[in-house]
Length: 188
Image (cartoon, rainbow, N blue to C red):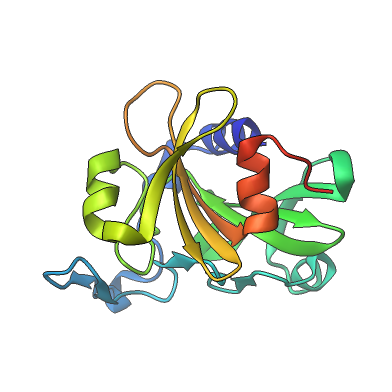
């Protein structure tokens, strides 16, 4: 599934994936000395709760009716569906729905950033510096590395990139979907 996210994002025009998120007049991103995002445009933060109007648990049908979904890929195993989004997040986010509910928000771009300022493009040691003891490096059975931060029953997961070092994909959602998927376990 991660490969789908990387491939779909790579298919988006470069201009869409590199533009600023949100109106420039409201952009006020600042980091504290601890690396925490103080403020920024409404669309600059991706967390375990989601990003912008794309909140974990939201119904696919409701987001479609609101005009917030651009494309929908054919259903995968376990009634999992991947979608693209519209508006400021177009070309930035890929969503995963299981049984019609949002279970993962992911990106291969920066911004967005996590609530503490982590993002795609950072190195593994930079993530360890930002998160301290709250996160850890993990490996799946294929030997792929990731950095996971558990927040209650949800996770922020940073995975690699096929052609460069460091973080290439940042995703968040319930651990029973995001983490199990990375580990190669059934998400049904």
